[in-house]
Length: 227
Ligand SMILES: *Cc1c(COP(=O)(O)O)cnc(C)c1O
Image: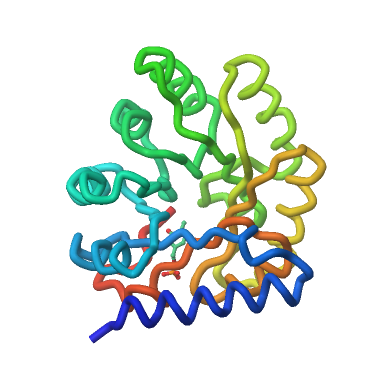
């Protein structure tokens, strides 16, 4: 059986160590516990162990698990880390605290429109396709500045950071470095990068948010969802 509380402890220690080694405060790194495909009980165990920030890939799945948990843990923070279709924007804007996967102008427009209607807007990160992979979502690095401008100046969206998912078959470090440089240049404080296999490397490169699933909750029954 997976001991979620023990895993969380271990990862928090690793985060502390990696942050200190990089000359950073441990508190500058937030662990986003990725509970996708795992049952509500798994998230509940993590909450009982003190974890408060969670990541989910799918709007419907998040809606099926987290409203109940939020009743008991009102300080819970929920991040959308999977691709967002425009027909799910109503729910996503209403429900998530952070949407990490803002990846195209049409989605930015839909979020802005919906935020206006609902009178609330999640904090937003722009997903950057650092590997320039044709099949992968995200804004190309060289187009990120123009897209940020569009989101901030034309739509008034609260963009707080950047996120990336490096190519599976490459050393992630150059991708983390690229994203960190970009965030610095664009003056964005949040950097979501690093997963179970490489979160320590990401912290060395400046990650403020690491998205860890398997190392907390164990292996998922489903394969990694396609991007
Ligand atoms: C599933 C997922 C994660 C977590 O991956 P693990 O390898 O299980 O830690 C992180 N980020 C995104 C975007 C994901 O889809």
